[in-house]
Length: 401
Figure (cartoon, rainbow, N blue to C red):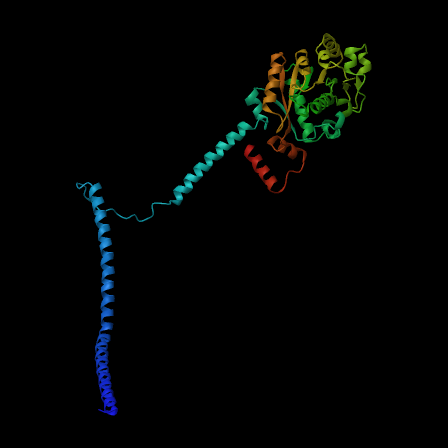
């Protein structure tokens, strides 16, 4: 055979094989096409089955939980218990209850307030009113002096001379209070009258010197020949109040041989004389407690109707304790809102221990708003407080009247 025939045979064979391959591929493509048409249906079926599986799993879990709960309930519940009657739902909430809570809060608040008031009263040891004098110590309050300047300046000098209200302001409430003290002092001993009176206080700055000076002035203004003795030989102030010299005075009479007429000085008030403290002695308590003091008082009784002695504070020194038994009585001066109750108690115990006769108590810095002071203002025509304070004061006066 020639080459041409040979190449033609080869080409024919190759072309036949190619046609067979094309036919095989067409068959594969036809098979894949039919399978592709079935894929969407299978996907939908798969999704449905997957959803069913999820639902069944959740249902299985819920059933397992209910089974466990039923087993627990069966284990704890008494099978003999049965429901007799169904509970009725309340028409209003059980809690909170505003009215009940408000009432409980009010009661608790009142109890707490009363408790705090008792604690404050127990902790506060200051004297607040003259009524406490009678309740706590069994002593009468023979005078209530309204608020006024009662202290002294530096070095014992009185920087406020208006404290002598009985001399400078005779129509004031303070002057009337000291005149009331004068009346009570003269009749406190069942009509006998106290010719020798010691004025003292539990502690300093209570107003004893001012009380002694005003009481002596009030006695002298009534025509009583009165001697005012400054027995506070440590911190004397009476000579400043009457603008007189301090020396010679009481200490000089008790130590040296001075004449009584040379030491006693008349004041600007008729019938009132002053025996100043004199020089500072080293032993004042021994001087006033000695025999010479007793002889001096006996001599002074012959020339005066009334003797007022200003003595040092009780708890500071013992001068008042030794002077008290030598005289007709002792007046204890306290200061409202300042004097400690324990200090008053100690002073009273000390005076009673030495046998001194306590005539009563004078309360300084008393509130000038009681019925007595209201009537005084009406009588003398003094203006009352105005505004809300005046309204409250008038309402209180009507109630107390």
